[in-house]
Length: 128
Image (cartoon, rainbow, N blue to C red):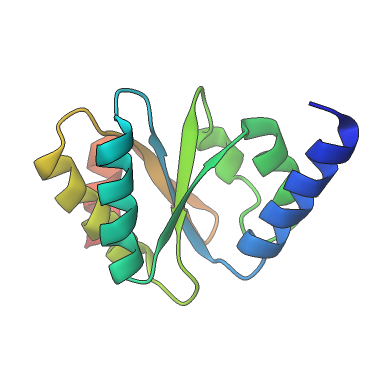
């Protein structure tokens, strides 16, 4: 990927995530295209979005913003779930519901207000 393309992607991620205060990370590994689209559709109904990201570009895009520190959740293939004005508990509850229907879904964790909630137990804690 050329440097120009990377800069464009980084800028796009920065504009998407600039006003976001809470974010969750999952691994899209093992999820086929149909399941992926179904998850995205259900998240959009709840005013959330899922974006598959390149870890280094996501870390650079959120460098000095409110999400500084969330890059610790980025390891391997990653997808971020976020929503403007959506609380961390709503995001965590939505992902826990998805986990019930799709056992292959790997919940990496959630990030809010400088705190990292890792794994499924962290998501359960964040949902409360």
